[in-house]
Length: 374
Image (cartoon, rainbow, N blue to C red; front, side):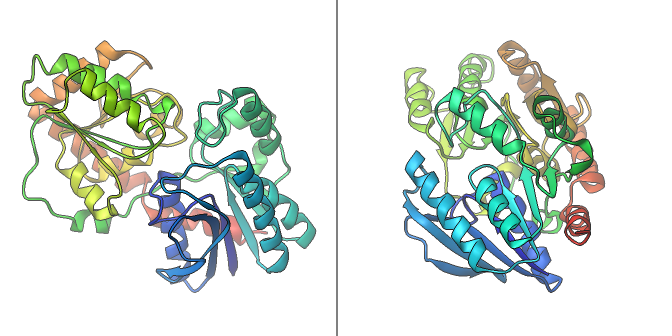
């Protein structure tokens, strides 16, 4: 098969959970003899075309500054460039990721009579996502895009599927849930010298709905009880400067470190060195980093939102708190820092759950079944 995956960005130039997902899928599709083209935005400093693990990657449209910041004009130029690209090339199936790739892929696919799959990672009409700033506009655009009659919709969790059906009237029969996965073999091969006690980690985009500020406020309280507590924040995004300033205001420089632009192996090392992974996010389609923590045998503490509830079982492989419960967040972090046997048990349970549900081999089998049934 000749497959087009259309997305805003691609690894290694942008290391989000969605980008990691379709890189792992594309790599395995190529290994099975399929041709995979990735069509994505052009980040400043990237080539127009490159080959990554056998995947043909084409950077089209306007040049986006790194870290990615996109204007409405950038989106429009990319949409037009994507439409032209698909019209000029032939594919057996097009898999478009949320959000900018959806409309041009759908329109061009219809004109070319090519099946179009929409991969929708999560939905929110709250307008707090980075891709568009106006909540009213975001709600209208999301509603329009999610209601388009794609040949198939893939979501990464049952929570996202439920949101599509309830909020946008999506036909349940057109939606397939395919979880994210992890590469257990690769993760197991990454070695560290020792795990660090009282070391927390957050991994993700630094945007409002991730609520990293909640974590900083919790650290500000816990430092009085756990004097050597540390927090590593891995990621980039428009909130980064605000979070750095908040760290200074609270005099947390000794306790908090910011990292970005890590290779995947470096990221896994940071997770493995940690005692607890914390995700105080109020909007998650899946939360790939939760599965990665499980693969690293690290327990998690997270807000009970969206697809998080499908990865984390409260009291089994981590703890779930109601969103905005900073006191509860602090208590569970403190418990796992102080109770090593409990922390170890939850970490092992997380690994077992990943083995059962969240590997790329399981994901690939489901994806191929969808692609080959058109």
